[in-house]
Length: 31
Image (cartoon, rainbow, N blue to C red; front, top):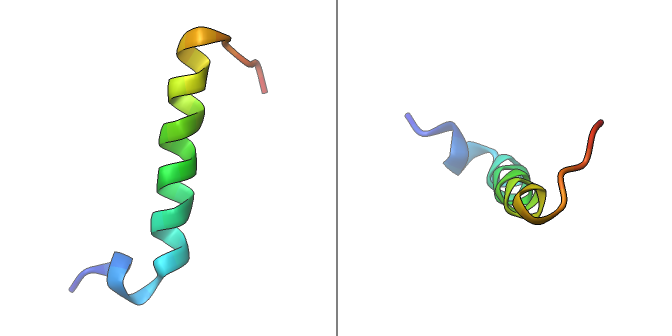
């Protein structure tokens, strides 16, 4: 069972996290 299929928002969050990590490469942000 794929939770991603059940929760599409989860995928969106994952993509956002990846984008954040990519941005972190250029300018690291401390949370």
